[in-house]
Image (tube, rainbow, N blue to C red; front, top):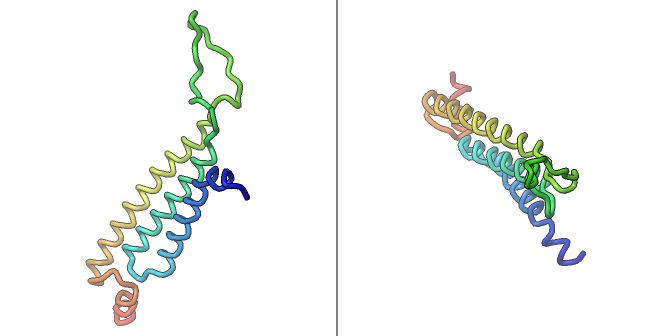
Length: 129
């Protein structure tokens, strides 16, 4: 394994670290707010992964260039970046914000009803009710 292979794939190591951090936070934490933050870390890992897959070395944005006569120049597919993964990740960001908003609203309701966001306290109070 050469040093160029390691440096050429640093974004994938970042994705793996973020994914493991988020998964660990979801499993190990007993506080519901920390679980929501861990869920957001996992969502960021997925978004970074798809964006890094869509990148190409030396490619340009998928905007067709014009020549001096204002005619569209022909562009080969390998010269431009595929815009579909980027558009899908914009949608994923919107879904992530909506999911976080809903989770925070539920956490507010849970905290008002049970007086805590710790799983053990909530479970004890649920059994008593």
